[in-house]
Image (cartoon, rainbow, N blue to C red; front, side):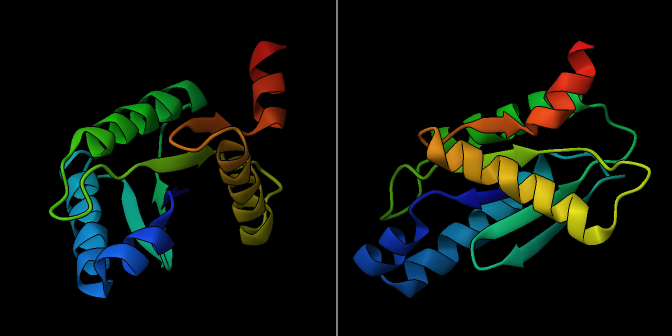
Length: 131
């Protein structure tokens, strides 16, 4: 899961047309830089979800980091530099849609709390990798 950092500021400063341009451009950047087997959807507002099948957490983290850097280095008309924050998790055997999304969302909020423009992996997932 990822969202656009300070997106409200883009809309407030440059207008909703510029905000729509940023949303569409980021969607285009992500689509061009993901695998055909993955799913990419707008979750709401400025939030998006990528479902990367057959992908371990480390590969998902590297992919998110690559996308984050591509977006950060893109120069948006009017808005200039726009950044995104990612929250990464994996689907567990006993997950429901709600538990899966909640864990991704928690990781996203951790990325926001830790300064934005970053990728965070669910802490419980990292414990599983390290053990």
